[in-house]
Length: 123
View: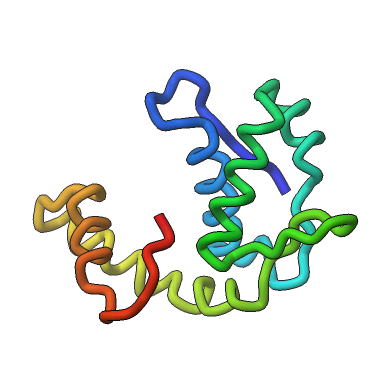
């Protein structure tokens, strides 16, 4: 697994780390039960702060994509499987939005607004 970041991006590093893992789940390069690299290894490889990686892993846990277990580290959760199943639909929606001139930020906001009542906000 290769976690990618762009140090020149204005996007926070923890968000880039989390997005890289999410992309690997969508592309089915990661599946439920797969272990993520240890946070210390990721931090050292990317030359970023350990707490930045831990923040990313905690965000993925809050989204229900990763289980964090003492002694076992970060593991892709079973609840992540449907995300990969939606990959084609998500890609089509993003392409359609781009064709209509809708930014990714606007599309994300609209998706968040259309959540069923009673569902927690994972952001």
